[in-house]
Image 1 (spheres, rainbow, N blue to C red):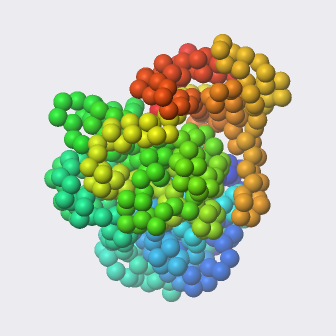
Image 2 (cartoon, rainbow, N blue to C red):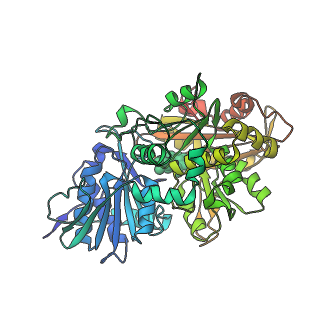
Image 3 (cartoon, helix red, strand yellow):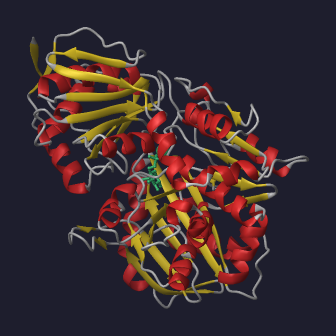
Length: 539
Ligand code: VG1
Ligand code: CO
């Protein structure tokens, strides 16, 4: 039997950079999750008999919302729901299952690197048939639907046993519980030379941060690649990530950093985030910024079997450093600059215009799926280390000696008053026209704009994607507000300085960026508007 429930709209269900993210308590309001899921289903055409993939990062509320989504999918007329065992699918694994099963789309339940638990964050994201996050025209349609929704529908059925592999039927719809890891691990074996990695004798530390990559990393690194037991740390997904932020950066993955900088460090260290799409890369004694990692992976990707034929193009988000552009130039392939968020890469990947993509926020991936992929980046690094016999530090130094070095950092000011953050951005936008020609210390502004992107495949335009201030000589600062937070505003300030071949390639990043940091504050009045003397997080 199908139940129809009357409801009224919530006015705060606009998807952000990566789906709808709110506090768990917000999602627990009656009708809240149901309204959003129904709005997604109302917007998707061709549901009848189609396959829908559902999975999440295992955080608090994951199982509850999966049961709700299954009942609602049955009412919406889907033919089959494919769900990961225990409700677990990493974001890249979900993307892969959508593609391999020819699904119409998927619901990915995650708030990524945000903390989890009854008082923390939850999220719902809809991915389309290519396996990637819904493009803006779809998220806009979903948002519009949330503002007019009047009822939702669900099968009046019992919970499905999510822990037992196999098929059951709910109101005529098949629910198939699949192994969360198997298809993804098989895909990785097609891309990388597992024998070479196994034979290289490397030592590895991988921190799964008590989040979704635990079972994936344990299967791939310890079982299939034979790294020692204990290589995967914090490998059991917990509903609250052990009380930590599952955010693989130098603040929240500090323990891994200390291991990699200490006595007896292994050759290679890495971590991933809540939903498994981000990666942190640290070699023995050498942290690699995500922007550099993208460039180094692109420059060496041909060493892995999956990319032996070369790359078609490289895409990066606008705030990501230009290091990857230099690699594209050398390889004589196109470089693309998109707005923040993986949804903007999908069309380029589908059109065969780009093979590798990346973001400064620790996201790297390729055309093997349509999401960024943390373990993929780890395996590509391991394949490159195995093929070259070099250390991470050696690869980094050789790279800079060839291309020059883009010193880079991001300063985040979290939990800033939303009105103050809006004022800061508004004032900044208001003075863009007058900035060129003005000087801040030794830096002179060459150009300033508000980044807009026209998708080369469908001509769609996205405006107001971040304020860029470009200085003479190639340094720059970018300002934008986060679209993934759940309380107040987060101001992100992206700082970059290029040092050419023959220049100072072995300096401290903070020293190299000090002038730009001062200029950023002078231009935007960060301290004045935020009331903060220092950023909360530097990555
Ligand atoms: C952040 C990152 C962005 C990333 C997004 C989703 O967005 O900056 O690069 O794509 O998170 O990643 P924002 O709007 O907060 O800057 V994840 O791993 O949270 O799905
Ligand atoms: Co993530």
